[in-house]
Length: 126
Image: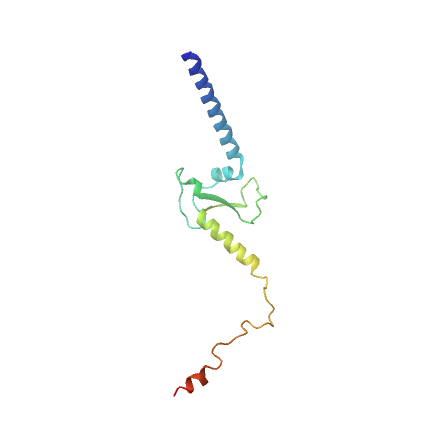
């Protein structure tokens, strides 16, 4: 019985290793895997360097903000750390929505002036 149990464990381990290798191949075929092979593991903005230990913090940024545009030469990609990537997308959103006006230019900004009668109030105390 010990032989059957050992061979069953060996089969499970073999299947697990094969599944892990398949997953690794799929990851390497993705644009992130391609970019990590193509470019040095350095943030393109802050120049922070990455190792296998902290590689999860390095992201692939699409320069034209189109995630479907993935040329094989990587011309639309740059590697950015999480912080620089978030900063880039927030700057993009600010410029994208800065042209939208929420109010008409003819409308006054404030309708109440709390200091309108302040001089007369201060003058009456003397």
